[in-house]
Amino acid sequence: MRLLSKIFNLNDPGWGRGQGGNGSEPPKRPPQGNGPPDLDQVWRDVSNRLSALFGRGNGGGSRPNPTPGMGGPTPRQSKIGLGVIAVGAIALWLISGFFIVQEGQVAVLTQFGKYKSTAQAGFQWRMPAPIQGHEMVNISQLRTFEVGFRGNARNRVLPEALMLTEDENIVDVQFVVQYRLRADGAPDYIFKTKDPDESVRQTAQAAMREVVGKKPMDKVLYEERAAIAVDVQKLMQLILDRYKTGIQVNSIAIQNVQPPEQVQAAFDDAVKAGQDLDRQKNEGQAYSNQIVPMAAGQASRMLEQAEGYRARVVGTATGDAARFGSVLAEYSKAPEVIRERMYLETMQQMFANASKVLIDTKGSNNMLYLPLDKITQQAAQDPARAAAGSAMSQVPVIPPLTVPPGTPPVRPAVSGSSNSLTRDRGSR
Image (cartoon, rainbow, N blue to C red):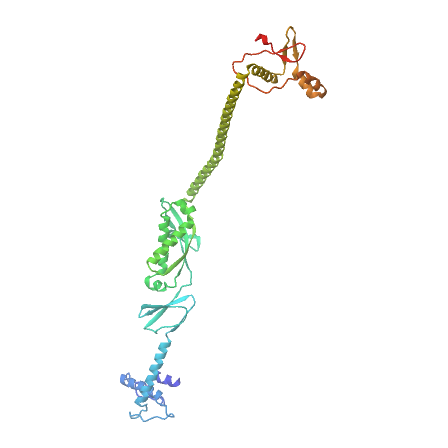
């Protein structure tokens, strides 16, 4: 190292003046007042010093220098020394091409400034500079930026946040964008876009303004926040792929959407009025849902009742007609018997619905009164008297028959010696 420092010491005053060329003689101070050394002499001094470095291989002895008064190596030794220097320099130059790519990164290789290939994580080698170069790109990092605010929702950036809706209202939209680089998009990220991160920010604002501008204010504020975020992400990815930025949009998160502060109070009043309107509509709809089924049920019940009454009346009329036809057929066979039976059935129906019975006895002006209602009440209260009362009130039971139309009325008559019912046949 001392020898090298002596050879390449630019502060040596003997440079260019032929002094201390072999490193063994101490340099002599140049005389004061002399000019700068000659360039030819400087080159000869450099050659002599290099020769002294590579020319002492034979036991430290030196051959006579053809230049009188100066020692140095032969031309062969000078060539060998220069070759060794060249090989060492080339080796160092080739070694400088090794580099390491960390996990989660890729290296974009360029050859004379033009894209060559992409190197993955690991120990890599390329042609050293200036032939090839490389640039590291982090593809695992999740990049995030905010639009409309910085840090928190109170620190608004109004030029970014204020947007116009379809119904010509203004809303304050604050959202966060997260994105990362694709593994195959590192060359596009470096070469295709001048400032890719700023391009993503501008694309996010443009996409959000386009999506919000196609929707009314109510949907932006309440109903379709998630749908708006999805639409913005799709539109951003479409624009970034069109410009070949190599960026993948991971998510769009809408943090806050509200009207501008200047109209917040009026907007709250409008929202309350709309909520009242919706509430009244819901109450009316609930009342309608309650009343309409009840009315439908009542109408259906009335229809069923009318249908049942119709069927009952038609069935009764049909049965009466059939019964009248059968009675008429029997009456034509035995008119006297049928007439007697019809009389008895008529009397049975009349007495069944009467609580008092008046009997007109033949040949007497006295009218008997039978208190059947009292007898019935006493029979219900005193079972002992029920038997006695029942003997007086027994009436024979006859199968029912219907009196045919046109039959003359008949008055009941009872004989004085018995309690049986008879008719005055001669009076008809």
